[in-house]
Image (tube, protein in one colour):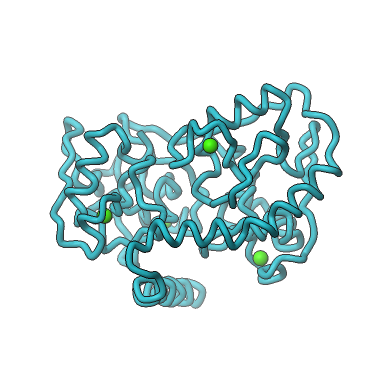
Length: 312
Ligand SMILES: [Ca+2]
Ligand SMILES: [Ca+2]
Ligand SMILES: [Ca+2]
Ligand SMILES: [Ca+2]
């Protein structure tokens, strides 16, 4: 009970921080300039890290089974791999972002098959090199290395600086069964045509659905976070099959209700509704306040083929 209360408080603090700090901290036209800043800021440091790591790796893995994910990244199909799980000549030189993990499949697969990429810190026999503890977020009991996924991950944004630099936290969570390598988790759970994703969320298996794509009596009463989209499969599918949930704004025939434009980030040319995924999405933090409240942006991107409903 105590940890549950603590969890709620943490969530509220996080949401308050995101909702209050972010809009003020970022300049006007924030999504693009923020990304550019991120890119410039991390560029030099990571180049040297990547180069140093590449030296230590041997030839490409033999018949390694790799889940490349999909092409939903904003940086898909630009001829460079942007997925932070990889290293090698086929990588982009720009900073690596959390949202590009498992989302730049064609670029990364092409480079991998050409022998210019390997999985970073994963030997051909699957042995994991967790790296060192030199990251800013080491030893805080949460894994901050974006090569991993699962309830052992932090819920704060993942940064390139922490790749292979949070060894103790990530190894501990991995050995406790709270992490897998990203893409190595169980396959998505699909029932009655609805993709429930996996149980890699921090709030999976607590008897309440925490996936913001749903609505109904089976939902948690706590704030809904983008981190839990497609990551609370057991709870949500259980409530769904019991008739206690439906997809929010999606009718039985798959018709989409985009909602209204009353969100703070409507009409900025980027979709901010976390029910969606794809290159038409903003790269800034997604807030539940914007669900069904960014209709014009999301409809335009959807109709242009730049979005799908998340999980489709
Ligand atoms: Ca790319
Ligand atoms: Ca950590
Ligand atoms: Ca849950
Ligand atoms: Ca928007």
